[in-house]
Image (cartoon, rainbow, N blue to C red; front, side, top):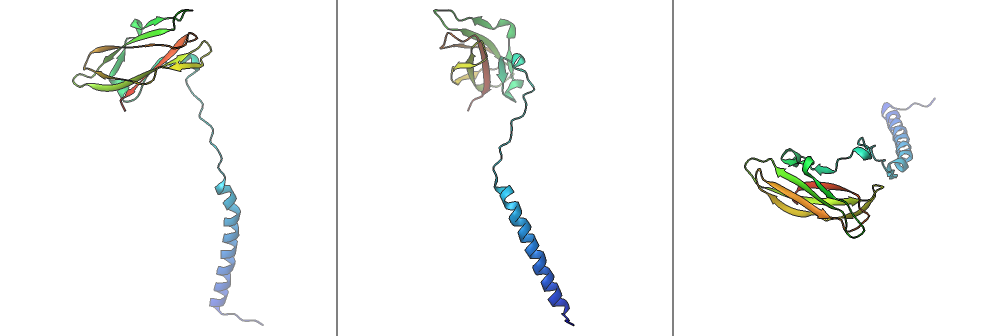
Length: 150
């Protein structure tokens, strides 16, 4: 009969547990090293309902857009589309440094150009007109993005 001390039995148990743990860890390593891409989230705003004018938060609390006074000159064979959007600072007592950019879209909603970011200082309670022309006669729609100056 083989007799082992408690410490010898404990040492053998620790070696066995350590071996099992290492094998389990080695089996899990390939799963940890894979670089699985994450899919994008569905957009809850349908394309036809996406707003033409988008203002970055929290700036959206201080910018008013006069949607009824937007002027759209459609593109023709001899000139591109032009848009003027009246925008007013709702800040009662401070100037706002903002940037805006027009994105031009064709009849299928594909981007056909951008104006590039333009910088403007909006005076308190004053109205400005953000204006741009497409550089492409295919433009038939637009998006205007307004953000804090960077």
